[in-house]
Image (cartoon, rainbow, N blue to C red; front, side, top):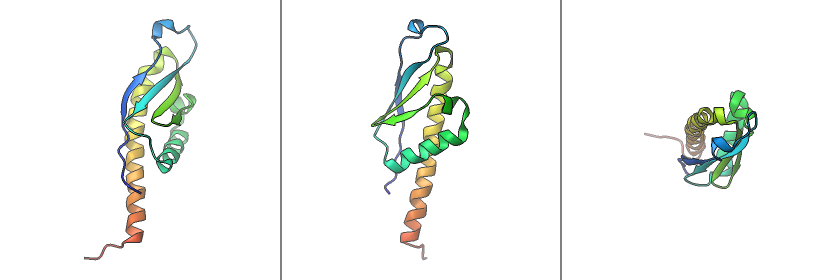
Length: 109
């Protein structure tokens, strides 16, 4: 498993003024690369474990994007949570990669 560094480049969302009060719209986080399947699995697991606003936003990874639901008054909060989440998943993915590599090639001084 090669190491990856998935990062959110930017967000694409409808203009908050166009959202009706009390409705949610799709927001898209554009990633720097398409994550591998194992990274996506870790992402889904982490969303489920963290729950709350992240899980309620129903995120889906589609190619090099994360698509999620947000209300206009919660979009900035969710953007920050997804940025933090991608860092956490990168760390977990790297740890998994290193564990697999160490099983294949044990360290010997």
